[in-house]
Amino acid sequence: MKSKKKNNKLIKIENFIDYNKNLEIEDETFKKLMFIYSVAIKELKNKIEILKDEFKIFYKYDLIDHIDARIKTPESIINKMKQRGIPLYYKNMIENINDIAGIRIVCPLKKDVFSSRDLIERLPGVTILKEKDYITNPKKSGYSSYHLIVEVPVTLSKQNIYVKVEIQIRTVAMDFWATLEHKVKYKPEEKISKQESKEWVNCAKIINKLDNKMMLLN
Image 1 (spheres, rainbow, N blue to C red):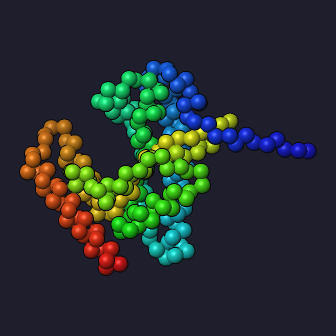
Image 2: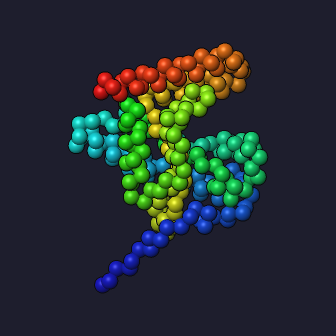
Image 3: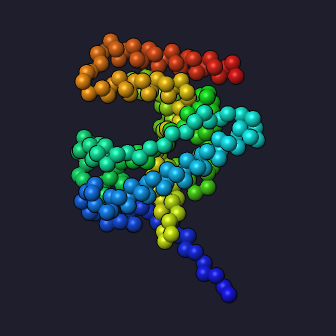
């Protein structure tokens, strides 16, 4: 008895929903989208975890220290769209908000960041759409990280869907700086002064020198 061939045709996420519908966070469409983004994170994180374990077991090298994943909250998505003046439609959310699903890869050394980026490019089915190198060219604030927007194939029972995920790759030192800076910068009850901003930039420069020194030592 012949088995039926499974339809493995990949579709864009916009073809899966009512694309021009108003965005409502209590709507079933929104819940379905958040589920799809959560599956995309699971699938991509699993692929990266395998790379992490492969390097540790086969090459006795810790290429990746740890991996974090998160889904943007509905309130955060809405606020970001309002701040950027983006009309609240599903079409606009999918096209303009690229960090709904996010993965952070934290590496021991700076060279490991670029090695991880190259390995991600070679992952089956994963396509890099955009990338920004804030390590070679840090932001004015001192922030350093390597950012990728990728498309990940998500396999459901009846559809295979491409979903966008943001990946941030940075060193342990960069992650330490970014985590503390974010907590201080986004305190709602107070604003940091220009002098404090300069101090944060100086700390970022010190951390960059430390990263370079550690790479030489290794």
